[in-house]
Image 1: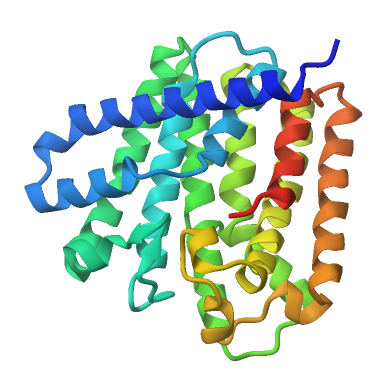
Image 2: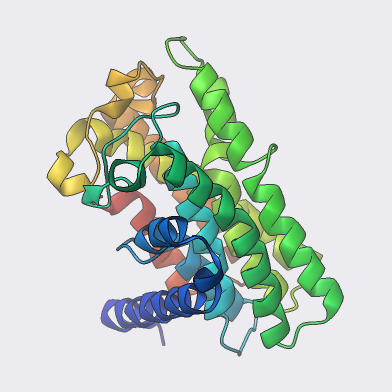
Length: 301
């Protein structure tokens, strides 16, 4: 019997709460050894409200692949990487934004130097948290090493950081759809894909399952970015919790600019179908994973 929407939403709420609690434990355990101002900046971004989509995806994939333990610490480690990326994305030398998640960005509160240092400090923090989370799950050392490599690869020059650089280089250029998708499969999609695969790795999944999970993650990661581009031109700053219209202000190529708003929505919807199909063939498409895939393009912020 399929889970009801209410039951799925209750599970997601519980997962977000568990991840928030894990982030709180990380802050309490690791930040006292960090210089106070940087620690305050890290706590400000880590404990702020957020969708926790990547963490919830990891937990849903973990369960779909047969995981039965508490993987919330591992899911929280992914959120540390994501939080770091937001701090640096908002810096004046990057997207230069003043609002994130409905409140001032980290550099507006703590200054550019502190925000930069805090963002950098979150990368090794995420690595340490992921390593210790794998150990607490009782995973063999080899699996722990695979988890760490997967997470750092997604965050690095061939993933999120590389995608951000390509995005900055693409400002004021008329990019093709293929070029735009290449940027966002790295900038946004790499960490989403890794989150889903990490759930499978933590559950002890084999290569075929990890490949299917990776295809699912790559498709919804791109769909998520397309939805972001659409929201940037259709929603308000209050609705988004961040400054609306930034893509236009920064002269970025976007999916609505290339495809029109309805064309962009259609592309995102097709990617969601592609994601679900990737899991159906392996009998991995749980109600939770399908719901999350649909949510990436129906959300309002």
